[in-house]
Image (spheres, rainbow, N blue to C red):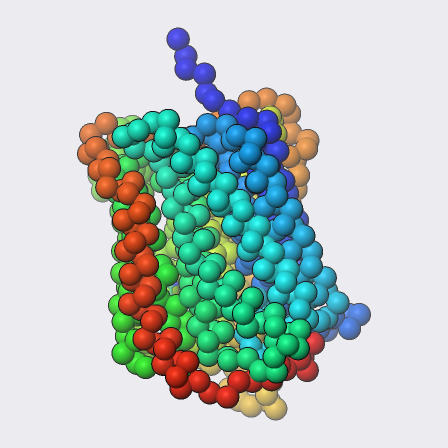
Length: 550
Ligand code: HAS
């Protein structure tokens, strides 16, 4: 008898879809801002209606970097937990809705501050640039909302554990919980700086802010933030992709271990964003650079595991030779093709990250548009193409529809358009960065200096790439709207891979969260305690707020 596939229960599907709608609305608006930015930077276009460049850049960064990602991830994790650990209880689902509304209300507060021109401080909101208090209060609500949802997920997972003593948890649920633990520990840093420093300062309760401490707390959060984006993509690579291609998960233990390593090493590394920051002793930067190199290992393990999955599948289909398996992969299936292109791009993207993390090379690229190129490859291509690949089956699964052949074709075209647009834009950013072009900067010829004139052809290439990407945004919005509202009714599979029979049994120590969280706390204390004490002991005079750009 055929085994009936379990579905995400309709009430859980609604919760998940609510998050996904907000995510794609953010993509449409943030993507439009992105197009306008690249046009301004080419020097060929001026913003209409008094819109400021930095205002637009803040809209872009906040909507895409913070809103799209967080909403999509929380929606995906809820769906994954419901599918693999059972339907959510009413209490957990209600908490999920409370989290959703807090996050949505927070987003609207922050967005209104930006749109009214009172918060043009970019997505990193570095002090001493000062925004209107509602910008920070809104962000705090987004974080608190995500905590409510995260705690609801922990409660749901704990219930599963209680009902299945001594059993290894479902891999997708395990990964969802690891991702949420990372998020909760990381967001403590941004919550601390927003609540203790930014809100009182922007409300005028205190005159000055300690810039070094605010940036350090931000980057304590900011680096694990990028792995909070990456891990859900890895969830799809490890668990979903093997099923889509018809293969097996190479190793359950390796997948879990890579997530544990991300948990351990992704937090105590924030200083690699502050390598040029005065006020932090080189020895502490050195330690955190070593830890940064350790956080590369789980990505290399992931690459190994994906190659193994692809090769084993190809060989099972009769492929021979070193790369014969390559031809056996399902190139016509957008659920595979989009994430695969994300993987491919992650090879140069990751290499760029390793360059950034090397102290001497960082001196060349820091604060140049090279860094913008780096994160458009990592988050805006690797992660986003994987999220699109997830949307192609998750949305129809949740809405009870199917993806038609025509939509699948359009999704393949969307992927190709995205990769071409990003190749133009991101390569131009990398090259211009090497020539010294700054990031976070509007078009300027700097008094027609010869060096700045060298950047202009690259800035034009960025605008070409940005325009192609905008076509990609239109295509994905068409596909998502179709999948959510217009596609034919039917059953779509939630693909969950099975582990290769020959794989080793999963060691239960990987489920020992107390142990892993304990080690994370020790590593964070080692990496941050002394530098923090030094920052407080030798604190520079605080800074007044600047808002002349607003
Ligand atoms: Fe980064 C700056 C270092 C990964 C995002 N990064 C940023 C910023 C963002 C960001 C947003 O050390 C800017 C923040 C700002 O506004 O200032 N990054 C790294 C390192 C890694 C890395 C070492 N970054 C990411 C990921 C991101 C992301 C992932 C988002 C999702 N990054 C830095 C540093 C800076 C930085 C410095 C500060 C720069 C400065 O000065 O300001 C590593 O995690 C990368 C490891 C990855 C690999 C690649 C493995 C490849 C895989 C694919 C396999 C392919 C297959 C298919 C299987 C080693 C897994 C193959 C098939 C075939 C047929 C070939």
